[in-house]
Length: 121
Image (cartoon, rainbow, N blue to C red; front, side, top):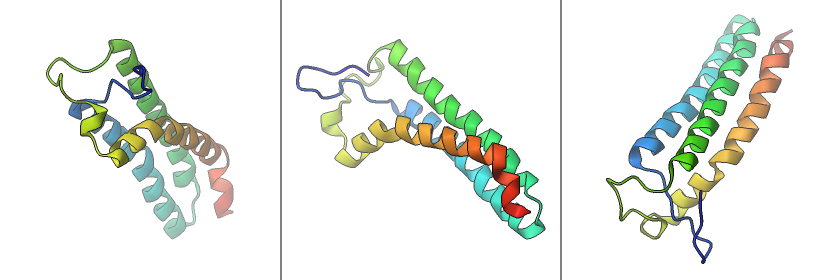
C-alpha cells in the first residue's frame, strides 16, 4: 500500500475486500480447529495433518489478494472519501497486521501439514 508524506496509508480496503479477506482467514483457521477436534475424538491424526494444507492454501490466498489490491491502486471509485482517518485505530492496526498473521499461519500450517499426525501417535 502506498503512503503519503505523513506516513499514513492513503489506501484502505473496501468493504468487499475486507469481507473476502475475513472469509479466507476463516477458511484457513476453522478447518484446523475442526480437524483438531476430530483427531482428538478419533485418535487419528491424519485429519489434523491434512488441515495444515488447507491452512497454507487459504493463507497464501489472503496474501495473494492483498498483493492484487496493491497492484490495482488505491481506493475504489465507489468509496472516494473512505480513508484511515475515518477508521478506528484498531481496524487500521488489524489491517496492517494481516500480512504478519498470514506469514505465521503459513509457517504453522506447513508444520501441521508435515508433522501434525505425530501429535496423535
